[in-house]
Length: 269
Image 1 (cartoon, helix red, strand yellow):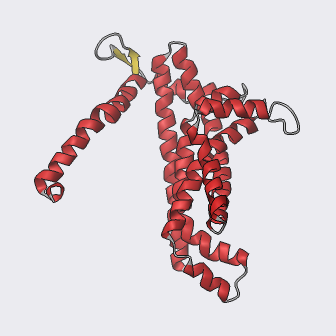
Image 2 (cartoon, one colour):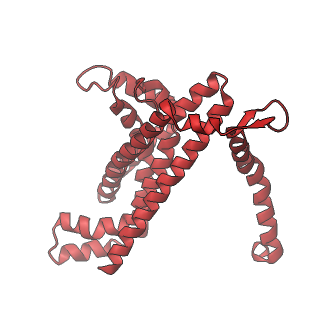
Image 3 (tube, one colour):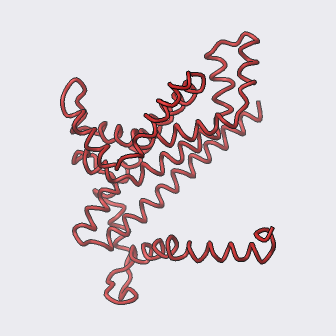
């Protein structure tokens, strides 16, 4: 009860601010300052410029931004389709199959992302499926890394839905495909949308596996940030990071807007 009192809530908010400010807010603020810094050799920048942002949104950095967005959308689509299908299929499977499915789909988060990248590189550098040197190996690596979260989010959504609706539809003569498309998937739409947002956000920031597999013509923006900072171009790398954060936020807002329109259309029906 103490937590729900006025003084308790104030203490909780103060504790949250004490942790949030130095660990999250301060680094983001420093990135924003560095993105517009022309020269920074003291406590504060000695000069200011917009050249870093201009360079971060032009040339190869712009190409990398487009690559990141295309990769995130493609990998997320694959992850959502595979993760949703696996979650629904495992729901009615025997217990052993469900446990095996859970283990398989959670395996990518149990190992470092560079291990996933190395595994993809070894597996697809020769026949029968040759992906090395193409953009598809990057998209596939991202899909493997984010499919865990798609599967887990949809599985959690299934736990909160009532299976009786699907059973009633089937008992009234609806085919399995109709039950899936008209009952199960609409009920899971919030979970699927949440999974898509999470997958896109994770893919937009992925760098470990990408460094292992990306071809020169398909370099994502996080790899560009890593390359710039490795060369000592920290201010430009900060500007590119800000562009990446803004682009990720815009994509997530568009996904949320699409979700709102779909739900509004459902209500009108």
